[in-house]
Length: 396
Image (cartoon, rainbow, N blue to C red; front, side, top):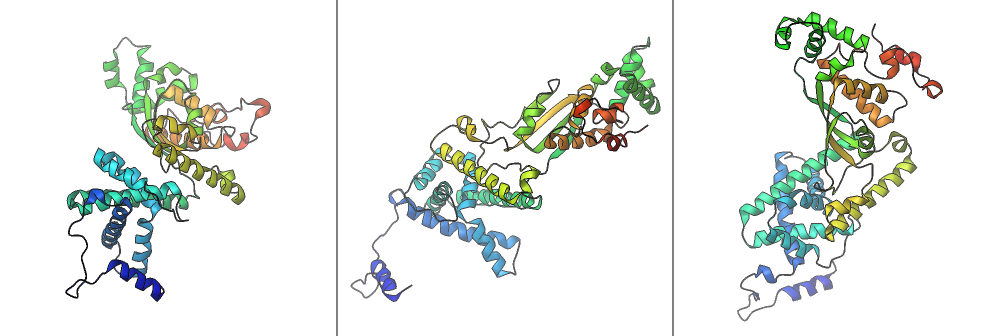
């Protein structure tokens, strides 16, 4: 700073009083009358100090690391994410304070979009208001909640980078019919027995159940396997995938709603062909970043989430709960484990198959693409050309 500039600032702030001290122009601070940018100035200072103290829980020796990491956390980009994460916890008065700060005229730096910078200003104005009103309990509560939102988002971002800037599909078998193979065997035996289901369930051994299940699958007596069902929790997939998935009509689905769940900072799936092409990947990520910003700006303008979602891409990551009975699953695997299936749903189908084989290995012994299931390819001239390779997966 040049000396003349420094002198001007001192002259503006400090005026000598009659006693030779410095004249104090204000006895109190009226929070309601303060410029929202001044509130943000105070909130920014508080959050800086809070974060610097908070990260001492993770590092206490490397000053440079502490400095760089705290600077990242308090940046406009991450503060905007923090606000999205805590918005549901705020009172109407707190939201009004945020809006006042967000709507204040200010110039955004190059490191953040205009929407992100305005949101971070609103976030800081809220913290500054709570600090000046001495509502320290609420201030700490929101600062800690914001820190948790940011830290979780940072870890998610880092994990995403490790996976080649794309999401890894997660499939977990959440629930299934208890003793599924025994239930199938009981259903098969009931057709030819005078005994009731309860009596049969007590008589059938595990070995006999496996034999009966193998026989039913081989003969194609599919009605018996409809009695068992499997429920999967699926994450890290695109809406391209789920649009295909729900075409399998004999199933139950519940998907994360874009009408009720805000998609600020939505994650997205990057197809391998795009990820492998630097020029294509750059265009792709720029477009998705633009969509994110547009979605944020629309919601800031008061557009409801159910209408703002119209700008979202098919690449947007989603979560879905799926329940199918075994017959539907076998048909699903026939179609979606095939090499000709779209890459993302094929990968998900393989993970689902691995899950059900853990609990019903005999029932799903040769489940998979039609060629693995039946020993022949039904695609005719459209065959993938991998028949010999796929047949090696069959268990005799």
